[in-house]
Length: 325
Image (cartoon, rainbow, N blue to C red; front, side, top):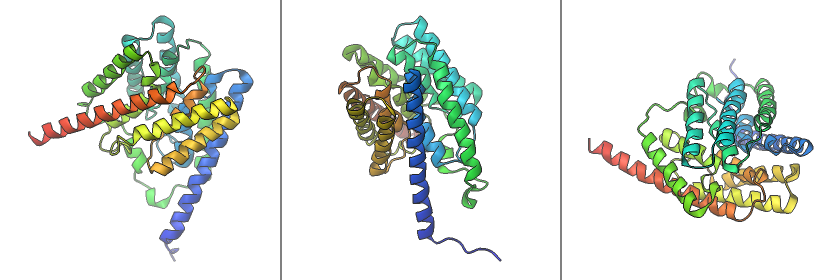
């Protein structure tokens, strides 16, 4: 005899409970990582993209990131090594930035890895001017712990029957691009951002998670969860950046502030009803920036606005060219 199907209200209650349990697990994990960083003096143990990775993995224990624990560790480690090497041998500029992003994309492609936040791992040391060899081991520590947690959670949480044998929406958006006509337009966005950096001196105008956000939008325009609302992205990211700066200013860079930052970013995403994991990384960036100031949210607002405008222009041009063929 088959058990009765759960009613919609029951499924909604289970989903709500699972979401907030994942939020609690994420904030606890980030607080632990921040404590390790404070205890060891290695600030980069709190690699900002750990916020995006941990929340998605702990919320979706059978998602594509959670199912790739080795890639979760290896991909950012290799891109971080590449970024460290470039930072040690080249000054910050268009050539070094594009080389770092290109190296990260090549590593992801060669590994066939779904871990696109690894792009941010490669760009972070160059953006912050931190050439320390301690950066890659710092990545290894936080990522290894997250990989272990992901496998424990996968064993505890059964695969929902409704998703057996088919990919979830998140998995679809994380697959490899099937079309590469977007590359020149993505490159133009990067060049435009780098040009603005020359005039403003704000390296964080092209903050590392922004490259991940832009890559996902251009490369997977039809499935990216935030591609349909590009002008909401600046609001979400700027709000997360501002909350991170305020919390660091009030509480310092300890576990409490890190946990509150992740919590605030998650609340912001829920308020805007937008699935944008890199926004969690934006909220954690002030924890690795030396003396973060109000300049950071302004730079985030400018960079994300430029991305939204560039993506919208490309989509209109591309759509028009396809409809006229």
